[in-house]
Image 1: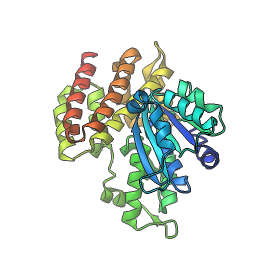
Image 2: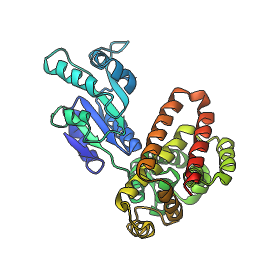
Image 3: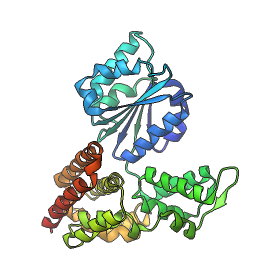
Length: 347
């Protein structure tokens, strides 16, 4: 069974009923992770969550099946979440399905969020033809689609949200639906809103919960680094520390922008007109008009193999931050300084 972010919501109920393995892939890691959470929320009894790193599953592929057929510490239900890079989980998934087909015991739900994998990967090809598996591909979202998602989140939470405020949340979250959901949840709590007792939100309420414009969020630092504006870097890094910006959340904003640049670069081609492309994308509401200048600069700094290396570097940094939580802010600052210098050298 296959799906994309466009039809995932419609396919999810059927997938929960008949699938035991869920493979979420694509450049939109935030969307893939949010989809995994949605599947877990729809399970009749999700039970205990067991998280397995992709590298560990690659080194010991038999373990995934062993864990899936085990019961929780207290004898209840469980589900397994694997965060993998590319095809790290391929061999483990193959063994899991082989043992299932051989009738060697029931397995709990297994969800794999595979960063940098696509629906053309070996893992996806292994799963997509089976009725008991779901492969869901998540492409980088644009401003309009995330704004629409914010409106849906708000409706579900009982918050009446205008299009301008929804777009503001989408931009402040760096097009990351998980961060946007967090802001909508905070807004609903602040307003004491619920589906049974809806409340209207305004800019004052949004300011009160901290969902400000990009000037108070991640994007000034993202743009300074990726545009190679080394003169602004020390001030932006100080602001990161002063505002206690979450390192992983900030890095996700970088990953989102890198994915957006990759999408735009693919449309642009080797000899395309950057200004004309961005004007077209702005009119189609796939990018915000205030982002045009920064995107133009960054498209000229990052393209081809250079952009591919940037994406891989951000993925590696994400893993490093997750495994070194206490030093995350320092590690992030050091790496961002290196990326900013690399961008500046391209001028």
